[in-house]
Each structure stands twice: as structure tokens, then as C-alpha cells.
Length: 524
Image (tube, rainbow, N blue to C red; front, side, top):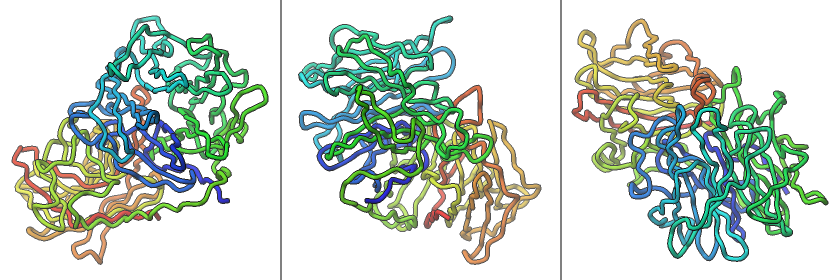
């Protein structure tokens, strides 16, 4: 029997909802403004995980055009009952200031690989919804309640309401069943039933370094709920020595053999408590005490290495990190910002063997950007592409990018200048502050391809370029990318992670395209 090495889902994979159906395990994680919506992974042993097709892949299920940074898909909950997979998710339209416009939906599928239904609207009273299937056949929706009023606790409690499968809507009264503990900021409610008790697992302390997993229980689903006297069940708070920080927002699963495990989010800082990989997913082994409370085997703190369950090992298929764009569809690890992959802005068919990106809106846009990117999932990485691009003026740009959101990115871009013609330069945006750190652009030959590369060494990114793919030249100094993190803006907590990939802008509106021959990603 081998070990679980945490994080099991590296890079931006927060808010895990873990589920077992037969011998198969699934984890659903948040995707926020990145398309497609909700990332799914599959395992047979809790050790090896493989990405699956995302369930939200149609505009009829999810329309995020205009969604703010770190809006979109929050905290999906995956469950199974009556021969159906149920997936609940929030689409957050606004989140800053007093209000949160957070709309909760439900989709279903007979097969985890789809097709998934169009959504059923549930409510908008708060975020982090989950679905509990009681043993009497009733189904219950939970979500935290958001209270915008001055002088009130914004995290106002946990709403519980019955869901009618027949009517496909919430029915009956709404009950506030739990207002949280002294840790406050109570969110991410999940209900479980064991030995006659309803167990309510929540996240508290906020989704940063005070994050924690807490538990309460009751004989009645409506409460009152008795708080676990040993709370929190899991936290990293005040333990800076731990590799896995921010431990919280969890869900639990029982194996076929009666072992218990807890999936939770975590973060691994690189510098000044900044996590460029975003919040990741880890797994801890659990046990139940004689008096009926769940505990983790790390004395309430997350462990890097955890004993795996007594299950046959099932290695995952290796990921192909070199994409020649020869297929008809993109590989599963590719993502777009807010919009589906479609021929109006990207194409694998207009020029076979190339990914064509058609110039779209600026990197500040929350509507239509031509960006195709993948999660950065390691502190040491190399990523590379070859691009053919014929910019006509300075409003045409294309190239290689390390992207957090519209406020923070580092961009090695090809463009055109009236005096020097086609050229290479760097755009560096930190907390909305735009900069071009090179004193001089690099002049490029017209009608010839350019090879672009980025090397990441923890918080440092070094860009390079080549004219033949063999001889590489560094361009500019190594850039500090520690600001590509959740933690960069104290007044505006964010929730995603760093992506690396390709993009193209045409600020004149003529959709000038760029053709990318390949993209190579290597974990160093």
C-alpha cells in the first residue's frame, strides 16, 4: 500500500467536493471565471487522479460573459442518488462591497461523463450550496446566508430548504439551522448522516491563513446543532512550519472498506505568504472517536504524506504536456476566460496543425478575451510556444502569458511599432499598474515565426525568445510574479491561481489572428 502525496490536485483546484460511487472516486473543484465550468477528477485509489470532461460546457448551463475577477463558479457540490449524479454550483456575478449576487443552480446526469442537463435555478440567498440526500428519500439544499446590512454578521448562518425532484424547485420553509462558532465567517456547509446524527461540516475563519474545518451535530436535521468541543477539525492557522497552509473548506468520504478521508483546500506560499499556484486540493485520513466525532490523523493539522486506503493501486494515464494542435478538439487541461471555445475566436481547423487565436479584447476585459491557458501546477516549470503573427500596428498583439487575472499578469508579446516595425516586448501588470519594463523592444523580421519561452523558478519568471528554436536569448530581467496570487490585494481577496498559455489581442477590432504551432509545458 502506497501513500497519498499532497496536494493530490496541484495548482488552482479549490473547494473540493469528494464523492464515491461504487469503486470510483470523484472530486469536483471550483473554476471561477475560467471555462469550462467545474473541474472533475477521477480516481480508484485516492492516490492517482485523472482529469475528466467538465460538466458545464454549454452556454445554456453557464454564461459568464462580464463576470468579475474571481466571480463565476464557486464551490460546486457533487452527489449521487437514485441513479443520478447531482451537481450544485454558484455563479457569482458580483462580490465586492456590501452585496453578493450569487445564483445557485443544479444540473444532473446519468453518467458522470455526461451529458449533463440544463440547469435548474435554486436560489440566490448565499453561496456554497450543497445537496443532502436523506435516507427517508427527502432532499435538502443548504447554503450560507449572505447579509448585506450594516452592523450585521455578513455570514448570517446556514439555510436549509427541501428540494422537490418532481417540481424541480425548492419547496417549503427556509430554516437557518446553524449560525456558526466563534471562528466566524461560516460557509461551505455539508451534511452527513451517521449513527442517527446529522453532522454539519462547515468552513470557518475565512479562506486564507485562518481557514479551518469545523463540525457540529444534531439528532434533528433542523437542529439545534451541538458544536464539536475539539473544533477545529482541521486547520493550518498559527503553524507557519506546515507545507500546507490555508487548510479548510472540506468534504468527507467513506471507502468501500470503511476507512474515512477528508478532502480540503490548501495553499503553498512561495514568498511573503503569497500562493502563486492558487488554492489546491489535499486529502487527510480520518477516524471517528468513541463519542462520535471525526478527527484527522494529523492532530488537526494537514499532513504532506498520508497513508493510502487499502485499495488496489490504479495509476492514472500520463498527461501529454506537448500539444501540437493536430486534433479536432483541445486537450482537457486547456481553459478559456469566461467564454466557450468557439470558431468565432479560436480555431483548430482554419489552419491544420495550428491553434489560431483571433485578436479580441484587451487583457483588462471581463467579456471576450482570446486566451487559451493551463494551470501552473508546480513552482518550477518551463513553457514554450512557436507563433506566426503579422501585426499591422501597435494595437495588434500576441504571445506568451503568465496570467492571474485582469489586474495581474506578465506578457511576452509580439506587436508592431511605427518606427521599428514588428517587435518583441514585455507587458508587466501588477495590481492594475501597467508597465513595459524593457528600455528597448527587440526588432523582429517580418513574416517569420518566433519561438517564445518562460522559465518559472518559484516567484521568478524569466522570458526568452528564439528565431530558430535552438539558440535562445533571454529578454529582460527575471520578473517577480509573486503578485500572481490570491494574497496580493489585501482589500480584494481573490480566489484563482496562475495560468500559463497563449493569447492574442486586436484593440482595433479587426480580429487580426495569430497561429500557434505547439505549446510545451514541463515540470522541472
